[in-house]
Length: 453
Image (cartoon, rainbow, N blue to C red; front, side):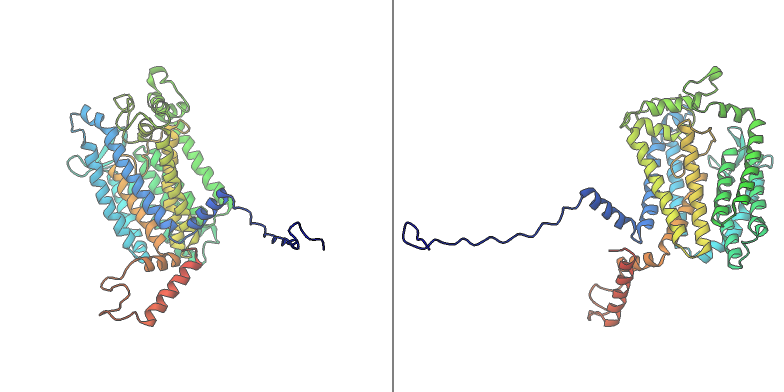
């Protein structure tokens, strides 16, 4: 071997190790999607969505009611916070009803179905008694309960139909009677038509549409065949066409679809100014309290058209936030109805979800000019204690059903500390017993198997 210049043998360089190929980097979008899906599939997701979404909608609604109702209150020679204080009081009472509904067992909810239905029918019939019922904006659907407070019994008719219909269909399903069309329709459809008749006596077609949507939702959940579903829908559509054709006021509202001009005689004034309010809001709005349309230009700014004032003051970002909250609430309700094995819970959760979603779609569609103005408030958001109280009780129902899922119960049991016990100790400072540790471990394994981390 020839030597080097120094006389030393050449140094043989070692061949370097072949490095292992690096794993491909995970797509950050795919990783974010995976994390969101894991969080979405956790057992407490529906519980937090319903609780958080409903509280956020109610809280933002209180802010917008205060902003949108100040000018109307001052025009009536009232305090600027008059409507806000009434809505805040209704929200406090509604929060108590929601907590009570959350804590009630399912058996008690089913037991209350018939008393609530009987009370709603009695009050809705009482509205038509001269001297007791009151007319507001041409609709005879109100009862004065003393002072400035009024009650609209038809709002409680929605809750009554959901609870009673869910209990009726659940009992028939337990007896395997829903395979016969007569048991699916009777007495559910006749009772629903009785409620619709009492509502239409007062001229409130908007509430009648919501009640019809609840009826169709219950029939769909019960597995009504297509022919039966189509038949009932055809009858309801025919009655709706007759009621619209025979009412000049409803025909005028139908003619204002998509109008951006008040028209002759200002027949489309409300619809046009709702579009003006949304169009002037821009991306982030003119600022809270800075609406121009609420200064006497937009009728019912704090009730039926509060979404238009929200768009003007909070812009596209505010309206999309409200839509996202309602979408999350609707998804959580569908999830609760789809994951339960209790038929009553499935029908009641589906009925409440149909009620809130359909009412939100009809209200927002009317403000956007896509649907006729039906005169229904935005759930949990618009001014009106009669609408807020039964809706918050219904939200409490959904929360109770979401907490009642087996995986959700296990997850809540792990997160809620036991009163009177210290962590890491049992009773008087001794170590945790093996039996208690095994119970906790079983709960943890059950929660992880359902997606809870």
